[in-house]
Image (cartoon, rainbow, N blue to C red; front, side, top):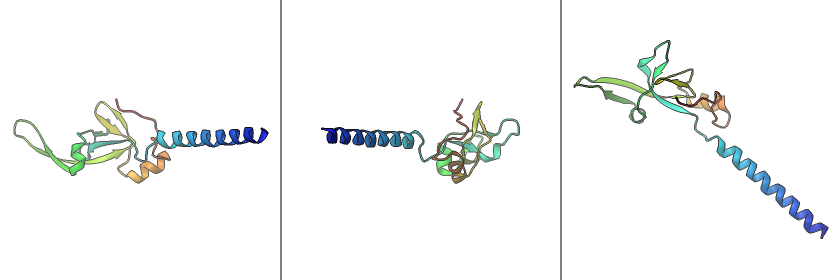
Length: 113
């Protein structure tokens, strides 16, 4: 009877430990927080203007209104602070962003807004 009790305890510890490990790994994905920004739009007070994510998939886009078009040099900007449509204090290097945040977690804990 003592042997079966000991087995139950050890399997409970193993299962509990695996649950903790799974929660730790899934709480932070392998991709850091990122925003698509126009590299040519930097404003020293606000940062880079956030643009639509679809601009970053192609690398360059043309946008404008009333027939006017302008080329956007869009790129992913990682682990930035975002405010009023601008992102600042981040990096364009994905590997640097992952290094700063451990398992891909944002080191600043910022959220969009």
